[in-house]
Length: 353
Image (tube, rainbow, N blue to C red; front, side):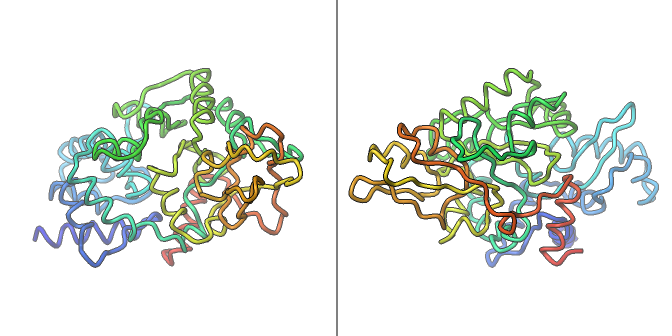
């Protein structure tokens, strides 16, 4: 019976937009057993992506409303499902594994769970799916140097942040997990911005703290100083901005392993190099998280197949020979209006309509 419950949960999670594909080793089943009790696994597999009050869930399952409400609350606070605190009656819904359940466990990591997750990641992150429908996109840092500043509101981190009334900051799970196993870097850990109802969830669960717009803007400034790539959710109305490094971020590491990262990343810009203006300082090379830059005969060389348009290299170029230029319209990926639209797009890309 126990095995069947976890098999049903695995299938349920794989039917959600982000997916939960099976691996050859079966490590994903170990992860589920670490995170969910049998009772929690059974209930989680019966939730949908539509928010419901506990009573409606209980009625649908023909179970005691009080018991179901108590269990749903516990599960939501453990980061196993999502909770919307709307008025006096909370609503509950299924959460996909990534981005979702895994990130909600930022305060509950241990070396064994991290080891299992690292074993599972090559199976979980399918770059061919991300090529069609990424969960995250890349936008330029504020200080980027542009050939012509043709930038839309949903492509500008400060504009996005200033438009939000509820903001939380959470630890970067990627940098935290790497530090816990003696790897990674010393870049800021508390650096991921979360907005709106997602911010309410993080604050309510103690996985993030509420911050002011001014503090959020300072975090964005620090991200640029520390050569962190800005990756918001892939919608025009976003729920988060991740600040990512190529040594820890599991998404950037997956991009980096790909021979041509530019082909799978949603980004509106690409780099243009004015070679005759290059002074050969090489300051830009270590800023690039994709190893797209190198020096040849004291002149910077740019591999456009590896560039993800983050703009980090342009901010330290003393001669401004590195410029971001907007991609032609035919090369741009469409950005869905809302997160729900993004989920539909990802589900279709995975053949899960």
